[in-house]
Amino acid sequence: MPIEPPPSPWAFEMLGAPGRLDPDEDLVAIGADLTPGTLLAAYRHALFPMPSGTPGDPPYWFCPVRRGILPLADLRVSRSLRRAVRDFEIRVDTAFDEVVEACGDPARSDGWIDADIRLAYGELHRLGWAHSVETWRDGELVGGLYGVAIGGLFAGESMFHRVTDASKVALVGLVERLRDEHADRRLLDVQWSTPHLASLGVVEVDRREYAARLREALEVPEPAAFGS
Figure 1 (cartoon, rainbow, N blue to C red):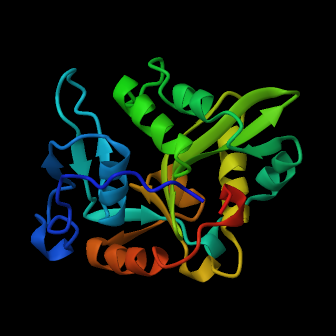
Figure 2 (cartoon, rainbow, N blue to C red):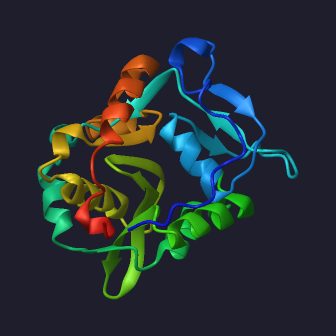
């Protein structure tokens, strides 16, 4: 079972009410910290952090106006991807720090993960809340993703690949592990949709719908694959 950290000193209740947020802005707050208690409180109120990009700045907190989610029953697995799955070994939580480091590779054009994020999510992982789904080939880590699991919520943070389809296979592996007797109440959050994610089945919902789905998901047990 995950270890509940000390509670956050910061208040997220007001920010978690969609009607109180600017209807045109994804960025909803600046400040607070990245301690485990603060991170968990934020996710439970529909927020997630990202660095500003300027060293020394406090965290930026987002609650997208249009939130990307992947309904578990709607994952689109093409014939070629189905074949690719057979070429990889999928593991869970055997190389969490390495996955986060790969996702934060500064050579990536869209890299945003800094040292503070790596440290914060590493601590969350060691408390049992953050998890990696990894793709391996011939004993080498070649792709994966990581995110935060709270009850029936899996909040995906980032993914990477070093060989073709490795990150997609990790996503297939994640969805397979979320499909259990509670699958219809689980919530797989990908933050923002992109054309690539939409091709895999990701859809957008507004804040109110996301908040309603989140409340229901938080009442669901964590998947067995993550050690609950």
